[in-house]
Length: 86
Image (cartoon, rainbow, N blue to C red):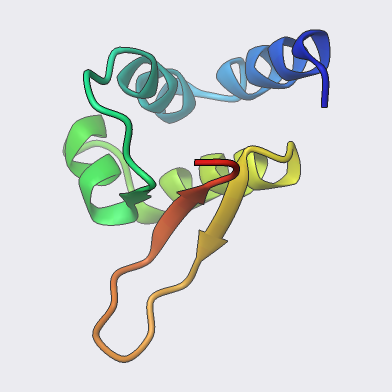
């Protein structure tokens, strides 16, 4: 994916709702680079009005755009989004 495609994809995702905008702002303002973000942490960042389905929807959009992979938690591990190329 080239830079222009990435910008288009992020813009499309950001326009999909308030949870998407909040998550993308959080990701843009991070001080440290992480290999993964947990769904639980992103739900906390979005606030009480946001449900798990909205956060997962945003992460699925990021996944389909090639930014990483959504890993469903199993056997005690949390659901998380693992970044591509990190």
